Length: 180
Image (tube, rainbow, N blue to C red; front, side, top):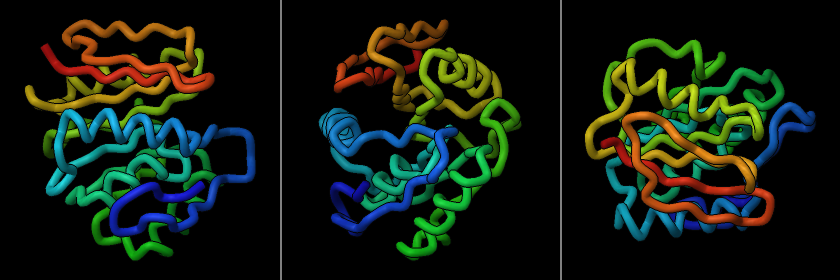
């Protein structure tokens, strides 16, 4: 696994050794960030949340491309270890806020986020449940972008959000959402 573009382009990322997390494949990340770049133009100055972060590859990619800050939420101990090592190796610590625990345990937001990257375990519906809860807790602004990665056959339907785009990449499906 490597950072695709930006300041840390080509740098290797550690992945947890256990099966508790499923790292987003490089090709899937490349497709996602291509979709986001065509809509956002730039990541400069964005506040990003990488939820169900695993190794942090999605949030690190956003930071590498110029995001101002990224909040990473992960509950698996081995994934947190890999995430923290990745941030330290890149010197990204000052721009990262790591939350050890369930995404569903996150409380009211201190600020809204420009981009939420949600990569929950497939076939659980946890990504949709998390987005619904976080919307009620003030994490979403009217102009926020949300990406949810699911299995290729899963559907994403969340009250108060509209689907901007969907792409299938291998066994994954990427869904970009906007608040209504």
